[in-house]
Structures are given as C-alpha cells and as structure tokens.
Amino acid sequence: MWVKMHRCLLKKPIWQNQNLFRVFSWCLLKASWNHHEQIVGMTKVQLEPGQFVYGRLKASEETGLHESTIRNCINWLKQNNTLTIKSTNKYSVITIINWALYQSGEDEQDSQQDSQQDNNRTTTGQQQDTTKNTKKIKKVKEETYDYFSDFWAEYPKHRKGVKADVLRYWKTLKMNDELMEKIMKKLFSEIESVSWTKDEGQYVPKAIKWLKEARWEDGK
Image (cartoon, rainbow, N blue to C red; front, side):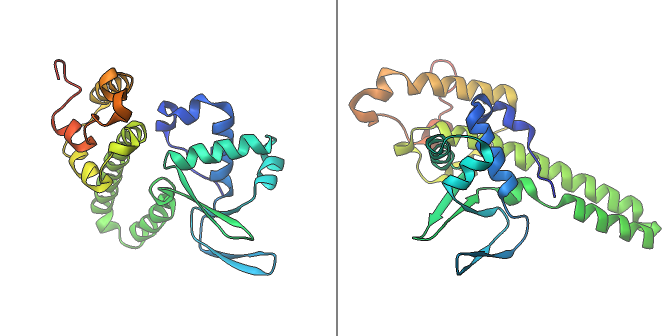
C-alpha cells in the first residue's frame, strides 16, 4: 500500500524541520488504511483508518531517532492539531487528523467509474464530467482547509474561539495564495507586537473578529 502526501506540505513548518518531517512521514506510513483489529499483549485493539498503535521505543528503532526527539516531535504534532493520542496503561493509539481528507480512496472510486463506463458507453461523457467536477470541488475544499489549518495553528490559542464558527466565516473569504500571504504576514507581525503580548495577551481579539474586520489590511 501507499500513502498520499499533499503538495501544501512544502509551506508548512513540518517541512522545515528534518526530524519533524521524518516522524510525520513515519506516522503516515504506520497508519491503518482500513478497519482492522490488532493484538497488543492479550488485548484486542480496534483500529480505524488513520490510526496505529504507538510506542516510543519502537518509533525510535524504526526512525533512527532518539526517544526524546520522538517525544518532542509527537508533542509538536499533537499541539498543532496534526494528530491525537489516546493512551491506556498498556498502549497508546495515534489518530492522524484529517486522514480521510488526504488519504481517501479516489483510485478505488475511479476504478468503479471506469467499470461502469465499460458497461454503459452512452453515459461516458456524463460520468467524466461528474468526476472532473467532483475532483475540482474536492481540490477547492482541500486548499481552503489547508489555508485555514495554517491560520488556526498560528493564532494565539487562548483567543481562537470556536473553530467551527471561524472556519465557517473563513470559507466566505475568496482565499488564494496572495491573500493568504497577506493574512499570515500580518498575523505574525501582530503576534510579536506589544499590544498582543502585554498583560498575558488579554487584548488579542478573537480570531473571528480579527478576520471579519480584515485586520491584515493596511491601517487596521
């Protein structure tokens, strides 16, 4: 089996740190691609797509990194909403967030569509158009969420607000690379500003307010 790696990864902090990228890639390769059961000791563990049983010693052996490095990288990925960890006294299960979004079985769907086209040539044109439109819509959704994930990861945690509400407003913005660059440049500047850092950041506006007021524009 193989995994997909989205091109937007080049713009993320994960790409800039060799150890972080190594651990993240290892997680992708370890994650289950279907529902299955794994035995850990004498315990049956039910795994969903995007999950795997995690052990720091095993991770160290397979990645060639020190256990402390593994721990730090996993904690970073957890804090930045890339994965979650659920632990018991016997084992831990890592779940990769948005696994289904980036690792969906498009090829299986395409194979089914090809089979249908062979059985009924009269619908070939319609099926191709539907497939193209579906992929275009999916691409737009992925890019929108990629942009939002970067923004959400960087915005001060104590002033993020309700993620669903912020994402809903984010989708109303006509997002592109140029606008995203403006937003992130201004956000990084604000994060380091006196007004945002003084008094433990109590003057940082809620994320949705910052977006609605287009604070990235000059003079805001």
